Length: 462
Image 1: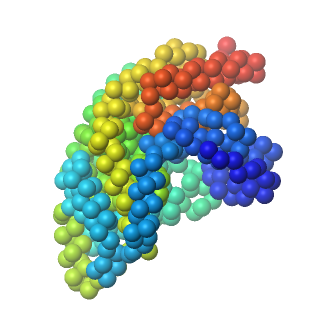
Image 2: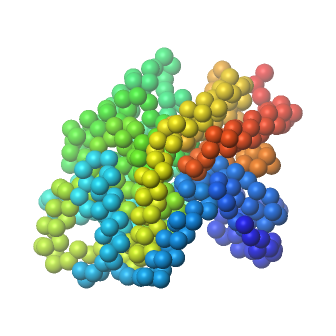
Image 3: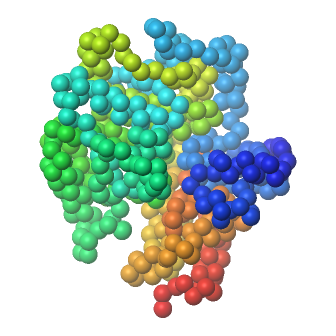
């Protein structure tokens, strides 16, 4: 780990890349400046180390010092530092990565298109869905449905898919053609006396109602994360995707699985799609595709979509999409080595073995008066804090209880993320049993100090 200093100028610059933050609120304290990383830990500019309990941004699956990825990037830079995929040219390593992704896809896929981020991959998927329906002579079938509290990116189109108001407010989003349906959060959205399966049926029924009201001939696709990440780590109730997919099939609506967070072992399978029985027509992935050592994302498409693309491109004389860095050979080499490591070290098996220790450890405080719900799967979880456990009453957002918990965890040497009053925890997949116990100890102490603070402020229910 290295220390690059702590200048006022560097802190000022950091404000401009500090997304999802109230800038005024943080002007006095400034950002936490990270200068190095090793294993599951990172170091700040004062020399303090932290367990990175969100794997960066749900992404650094192999930790912060995997020498094989560093070597893969170094050798790729020496061999072919750049090439493109235009005009019937492409790097060999990019072809190899595409073939590898097709071979491990959770359902049959035909082709891979590369991008630089999850946002961009979802953006590309939207373009292809519109292109596909034009090829089939269905120019009205263009609307796309996502879910409230979903996160699919921050570009104009992918940000429109996202179902979080801060991504929309004053950005003039969402744009036309984008619709949102129920968030499948049983704890918050279920009606009194409703079972999880009945709740899933209601969600599917409301989706069908939306499709019928809008006109089935206008609805092109449905986007879904297997587990909703930035919306608060929302795990779908039993039978949810089974019932949702029945509706989509009935009205000939494509399904895209956004595997940007869930892909590559996070849920205890290689894909979250497998964990929840999804049968998508398209899949996007990014983040853990390269353990985020270098930016890369991918969109996998099914054979029917590919054949429609070929037909339309023959008519037009050109497939008018591409990007300078899509399928970059250095990124592709790092991604290939990442996938090799997952297989050689049986990372999926590791998550299955460690998941219960992680999930049970978080749930040991489920009866705590400050905790409304602990939810998760594999090595991803959310802890939702409430003012009144019996009624599920939330704290006033002005209190910033989740943010206080996050700050206390940081004091204890753990970096997690407060999403409102839900604490997201998503450690690197290489975490050990002892490190899980250490992480849980930080959570325990942060919980107790937050509980003391809440009581002192008179913020708990009588």
